[in-house]
Length: 248
Image (cartoon, rainbow, N blue to C red; front, side):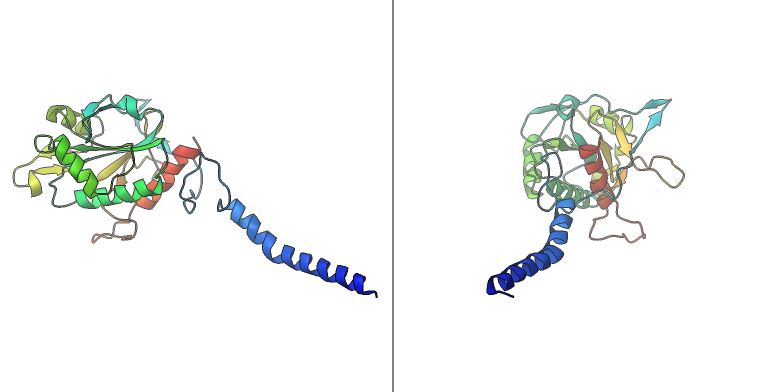
């Protein structure tokens, strides 16, 4: 065999080895989204829903439950209403800044979720205080900075106390009340509500096919379990946010 023929054989062998080793890895990376993703997908490349089965609706009197109209003031002093969240997937929580128990955990979890979708203009959070007399615009702005709020659609909201309590208790059935002797003077739910782009409350279903309705906000994803043995639901919530963002 001539020297040039040896060279061709060597080059062909190198190409064959490269194809066997590297091409499958490249294909895997593309399929997993590490190399290229469309702009509509989440910026977090490691987050993918395990399935894209539709989420459940909360049905009341035969109709899908929709978020009731609201109008409150955010930490920048701007008026924010349900209209500002149209076309966005968003979360709703009820809290107060001087809460000594579950609120810090809830907002740490929301900060984690915020950082999972940092550049999604179609994602948002509404954190509504149940102590508006104390939680002024200035207080909420300072609180938002303390929790590292960077997403432009994360609004800490204050307003008329009666309107807020109606919104929590009647609009979501998420308990909120001033209670003498309670830690911080108030009691409220530690759950998050997930709202789709059309304003409907959405969730996963239980083993019997019934909507779970809300997601526990008081257990961190890294923590996994609380002292009562309850599982965290932040990882499931992240998956379901992505479902509503990218598959509906």
